[in-house]
Image (cartoon, rainbow, N blue to C red; front, side):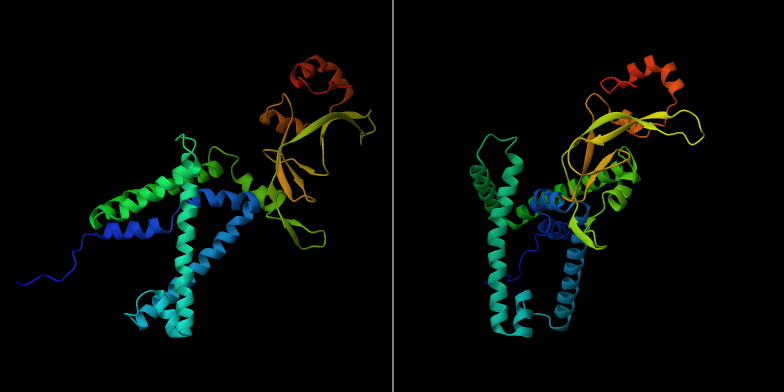
Length: 301
């Protein structure tokens, strides 16, 4: 009796494509990236760009080696060919160790995202995720391919949604392009070290409160002095930046963050910080209206 020795082609091109994409998108990109963004701030974009460039170069080199010497197996085979058996052996075991750690980290990250919705401890959720993924891998190839296709599609849709939300925040319903200007000028990616070079990375800090007061301003035209409402930060040596929305920059601590004032909305705060100088006659004329509008702020002199 003759037997067909060929393998069944259960995976379709769409399965293979989404398995490849889904394999590089783990829970860490949703959880781990938040830690990097919190530490580095906007400068994390430069880190991701450099890492992506490094991965691109490595994949190009692997592709060229696969074309020049096909049939050697995985990338560890090319390591053994170029550097010797010891390098291939070390590379293979490091890769295995990497996936052992990655499975645990991904399970913990997935459990961390599920904990607000599922009333179970983290260790139980992590174990359930590992068991579920192991069960999927033990199913038929076709079932595994369908599972990976739809779950990888969900990852891609989520990332595209995040990108669309970010672009909408910058160009639409958010602060707009001024937010980018803050990162480039006011907040900066790096805080200057005081000697003309880059210092520590700028991090996003907690909101700081403002203290208000009226300041007398001398007239340049020989008239009596005017008065202007001014604000200063209640604590720290940070600099108040009149952007929209207003920010503070603390070069000593490497912090950049929002400012707030009790009883004052953000839109009103932006106007008050840029208020013009008022003549004494104008203050007396509009004193009642100013008292009504200023609310908890100090009254004019």
